[in-house]
Length: 375
Image (tube, rainbow, N blue to C red; front, side):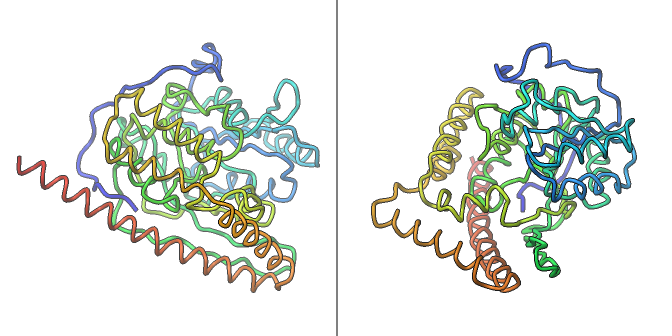
């Protein structure tokens, strides 16, 4: 999935960047970090169905030195009560946090609330409908402890197609690794990889970051309340810090009817290759961020610009709406196992396209490296 092989320890990268208005300057320092402790931040909004499973997956970790911060983003179901019960069972390790006004403030503000209250040397994130596999924390901590210059470790996940409504077993799919062995991304390598295909984007459940680095890059941008909130944070780290990529599946990403991304796609609000307001906003932000850090690589800029997608004319907009209605009808009409099979076929198609994009990127990077070596 990545390009540059691990070869040697790295020199420290200290480009911190400006501190944003979304977090107070006092929160930049926050509580003193506890060496070796991992703070797992789980945000939830009306997640009574899966929250307990997410928490149990952290409790089942082989790495014992963790704390958990359950951040309620203005839930109106029973999930706050579930969170309080779980915290009461392990008060030394689990805390429940809420926004001062008790309302829904979005994913970024909720992750920031967990981040500034974290006590761990490292911070990991988990959405309330996803799960860690048992070695998730241990594998990441081993990397960060062994390589002090590495500021973030990432791994991959298993896609879990399930909604549990018919009692059938879930269908699992893991995108294949495109290279063998762990890798290091040096800036801006990581951005190039995830920009060459949306399919290769890093999921928030797959990253562990040093807490001081997460705070130094500005945490999460509270202006991005939903779509791209995780990609903004990940991009902030990738722009200025080396990242270690574990070729391992260490989480389960649950793909179910109520998931945020799936609801957007089935509503016709998000389609790959078609311009979308949130995507355009992210691209504009990222280009400004690259300029702020003095990264003027024309090739990278073209890759970022390509994320905008094409402006949809009336006919294309109609096709998008019809396709969204058709997908929604299929989910309601077909047996769940059949509909899940169609999702899996579509996912495999995306994987093949991503492999082609990745191969082209690798060839271009190799050519550019040879040209530079020959100068």
